[in-house]
Image (cartoon, rainbow, N blue to C red; front, side):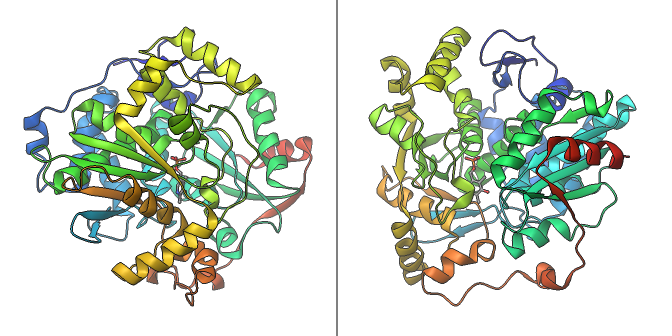
Length: 462
Ligand SMILES: *Cc1c(COP(=O)(O)O)cnc(C)c1O
């Protein structure tokens, strides 16, 4: 198994290389050269297996023997032992045929833990094998930095530096990052906004000379291993509901498209999926593209579902590559046009997408209404991201006889602001986090100056 770029002009890479690389040198994203198949028998044999064992079986062909089976099994078991629910990602039945797939039982209460708990361990394994160390740098507006930190805190060969805008993230979000006191974790509060932090991370990737040869690794959602890890819960949940004998549909609260693309990969591997419903908040580029063939950037809107606030969906390129029948030149040309001006997909690729995907966009007022309505009907308090999914699933349900699985991407306690706005007194943090506000914190405040940040990274990495 090799990995190739969606723009067709970068060298093919091994699994190990692709995990350490991030973006392809031609600006594209890496995808597997061919899609491994899960046969009817493979899927049937998964009934009743543990999540970790299903994960091992689904991911094994992508790892391609580059980690021996016994070690990989152990890595997978360790990664998912950090989840507080024995089922790792339990299914919660909402009504006759609508299910929530709870992806928020990991250390930071959001679905990104599923991928990052695994990615940190895989990176650490490859670095140890090579006798190398690496530095991870990332910028966060609050929600996602903690998942990366939790994924790397036990990694001997990684140092992680996460930049957040000083005094512009909520206390819970800050503490989820700054109360991790591991020696390889560095939180930097930048005296500036998120864009300043993001720009400094980008500049550091573009010119890495300040690290004197040490590798800088990106753990954002373009890293193939994150997609790979997310394929697993589509397979596991469908099998739990009767696949391969029975089809299911999925509804996915989406932003950068990494999550729903993983679902599409599960489908391409052979999982019988009736349809995927893409839910967006007011930042609706995915919905506009699918519904109206309006593939254009619009101003960023700050919403009640902040982890879905994006202008461009980076992983959508991976689906475009399939829709354009793996024509890297056509994908390149489309995305160059898109960067410059509003554009549209060609007819045939758009028609291919519409065969498998529906979409729905949900604004803030509707998010609040859905949180109330879902509670009234099911007694569940949904987080605002999951609320977009709940509404989109109901509106774009399709065949009502097919079970609908809506992905619950965050625990409501993590996004209490929306829950309170919806009229509820709030949601307590789960027991393993209820002392968060008393824990010791550690972080460094730095000016929004590239040289100061790079000096801090260079001096503190181990
Ligand atoms: C990241 C995130 C999303 C969006 O996922 P993508 O893979 O970027 O589409 C949705 N909900 C929550 C809570 C998230 O953290």
